[in-house]
Length: 167
Image 1: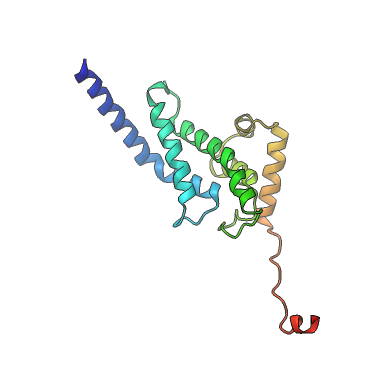
Image 2: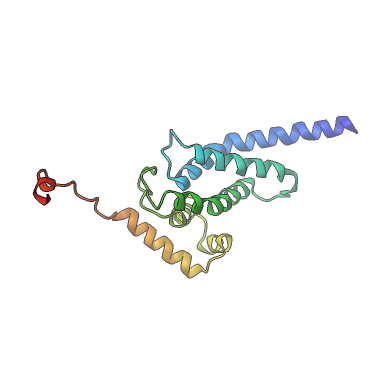
């Protein structure tokens, strides 16, 4: 009995290792895009991914034909949605810590844009995952896409001597 259980555990661990070897890079990139951190310095993304992979491993035997990548991505997105507003509010909506073209987006906009465009998840699936109407997901995705393609201009630096003239 113990030998059979040990063999099942070894098989399960090998299957999961193979899954992570194949999908780990893309899931890391997805988590990094969600958090908006630089790719070489992404502790929040790694933490999100660790939780998503741990949850996927815990459910491994119960997936019964379900795509493990979809399961991990869904858990990654849910965990990000549940925690992102804390980080966003704590930063006072400042985006100095974010990097890349998605830095100007809110966490919800980043989540929807990454799921729709980078991951290729359908509008209806994103709406169901986030508990939003499909029309709302469509509008948020359109707004986020427009923001990424046409970012607002950066504030211009103050003119030399402008401070002296104001005093």
